[in-house]
View 1 (cartoon, rainbow, N blue to C red):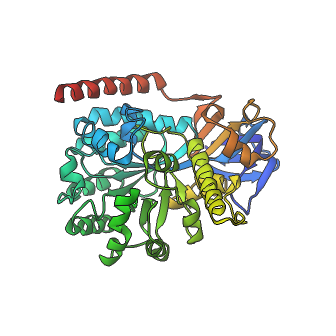
View 2 (view 1 turned 120 degrees about the vertical axis):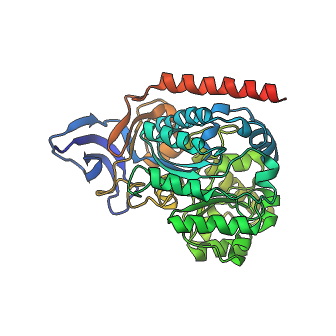
View 3 (view 1 turned 90 degrees about the vertical axis):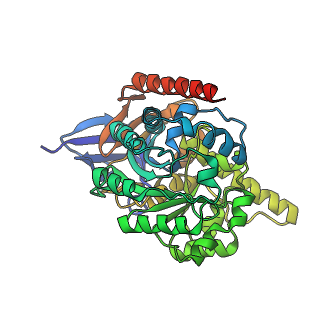
Length: 448
């Protein structure tokens, strides 16, 4: 029997140019798929009244180390160099599969609560084969749409991040592919989270790229974060190894050379930018306009909740403010007018939704309210005092709304947040992640 949900009378921002915006419109969902978007739809369906709500596609976070939810805010003042020591060399070796499960459960629910319906889980915590099993189980239980990016272990900073000779275990990635991701059509899909040149010897780099391509899964890699990584010329090294391709997402990109930007664009690569982390932790200016100028469609990501908030509203504003500040400062220094092309609030909303789906390789199924796509939908309460009155709905979401205004969240047509409350067992998730916190802190103390 067909299951229908009708989102009625909301201010619809479809993020699809062919559908457009509807100041008062309906969205009909049938069996998890968007069936129609129009000014008024009649259907035998469960009706959710969207009066006073702004209806948007769910946000897409294209790079988050979800396993770090258990150690939220342990490094509030950290630089990138601090992060490697304080997190990867201190906490990561202590993580059990139970810790990964708890963090991924709480972290994915945090995403849903904030209107993030699609997550790229950059999981470099696979210290045993049981670790990825735990991460995937938690993602599955939450009902989020996610790309699980299988990464390396992190039991030793020296072994895994300084000219590492240890490759991601191909046999276990093959096992995970067969066991959990036999189809690429599910809510969860698989990617490979690689460390890349500069962090690994060339034999490891080439073997990991070959593994991903053998399994026909996307690749995601951090590049040019901070001046040291920028000097590695990681994209240039990948080019010299013959490894560039449209299956690769480059995270951060703050210190890419002009040649490397051209190489990314010419190879069809994609870009994920984590603006709050980049400005706060010393990675460099978030290169949103630089990516756009090279014909790329940049996306946004959260990165690490050890040091920054875990919501997309923060990332939108960090990118918007940083980019405009950079351009204004450069124009002042050169004593020239600011350019006509400056980032707009509407662009930021598109970057956080459609562009994110594009970068995650999921634009055929999410990222816009397009008939035929899966129903990943978020409703923002625009009657709240921090949002009302609405003059420009896109600006209201990008510049005024926050997590407290995320009232309704659907993923694949299933309501995951209703009337401002998650439908999941939040108390259990919080208990598990607090127990994980306590376990990790005790282990850290015992190791000291």
